[in-house]
Image (cartoon, rainbow, N blue to C red):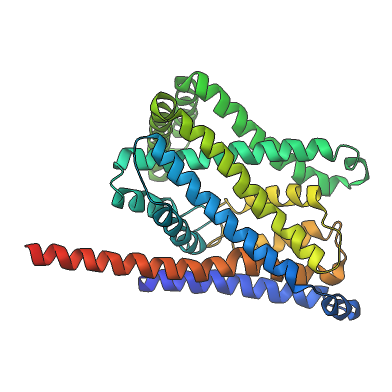
Length: 345
């Protein structure tokens, strides 16, 4: 990695460590040691295995979506790009910053740039569809539970769910009439441009135009010749998010608590949305604070800090380690290819 990337990695880890230290300071008490004495490492190991399985499902999603467009990409290559993506996501604002890595690695597998871009964009679309669906199911299952939740706690849950559901509705209309979304966003961006004349707004409008065109092109690509890829993508996206969301319940069980499976799905849906906001590198600090605040609603305060540390250990620090290994492999390959290219000249 470049020096600036190492700097952002240090910043990301630093944010996380500082927030985790503060969380532990304010949550540890006499009964924390009692909980730790009952800690079952088997559940932590299961959490790690489930996380690795989730990353494998992500790799399969890419492989099958590429296959539906007529490309044969090895699973090992898809998994390696997913792992390298996790490192980049940890050093870029928000946790959704690894798309260029996946596009580049698909290109290295002889996937055309346009198709590689379509695959990566549709991955994000499928993430939104599945997250919204999970949120809707969880909300229905917790219908009787909402009466006992305070308004200041229930409000962010409902807002997050509404945001994702709005995305689902817009996506549904876009599938039936792609030009509708394009016209709406163009009118919205033009309205903004008329009221705030600035270079930044102009860049924002241009970015909207590009993203709408990319989305439209990706939709046409998959609806036209990659329908099977969308079906497989939905399946593996569902498996990915279910695996990621169940890890918190496994950690709670390892600490001797109830799994709070449905509640955990709702909380992590909110955290997933918050971590997509580009505020800190990799969403570090935001994830820790969000998890501490939301899980403290139904988890004893004595173990909230320990729980968040273990949760981030699996879902953040493990990602950095495997991402470094995958990135080293990619850098080594690129150096070999460059050396071969120079020799041919």
